[in-house]
Length: 267
Image (cartoon, rainbow, N blue to C red; front, side, top):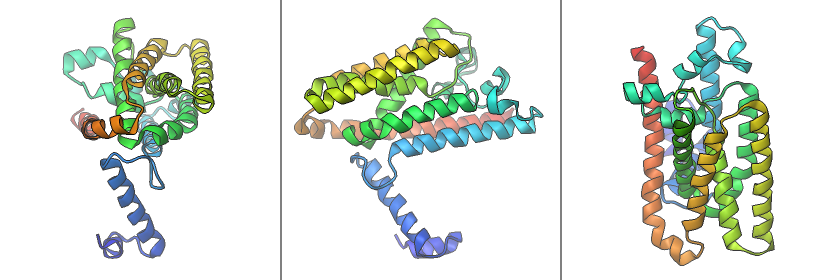
């Protein structure tokens, strides 16, 4: 593409912006072709950015509704449901299935967001670098679904928010996967993930977090960690499958947020 011309039309002038546009294009190509996380923008940082944007929009919505700075630290359930929390009664009665994904990008205050993003920052790049971007997106999305599925069984009428179910999915995956890889380096990573799991679980007990969702996410991740091929030949044979799954997960997430915005307009 002629990025200098496109940049000029968008008002993004100068070589620095042209270089960024080309870098983002290269990152998108890598993601769509299922390549490993490279020098472009990996999915970890995109997911982190979406969480930050979603939290900022919640703060703005709270300010518009006259809630002041309360949503910054302690948003009420009504606001959380409005901005995308999982609320199974509305999923089942209104058909708002998009909540099964948007909840994983919605957080109940700055401390909740900061802790989850710290975990994502610590463990996301290592796992994405190991399995590739589209596999990482698939893992993150599917374990968000297994986490909320467990929440349906445990507390079907409670509003639920947070990325922690999917993060436990990453941890559960890494524990099983690196155990299968074997060797001192892989077992070091496995033990690192076990420590994170223990710390996050205890933290969840202290703050009253959704440990049912944590368990559901961890189990979903562990299953994927047990079945994902380790060898290069197995990975190549499954690349078309994960290209498809990863693309579907990205599309489902985008559509879910689109339907959330539509619900704001319609409401």
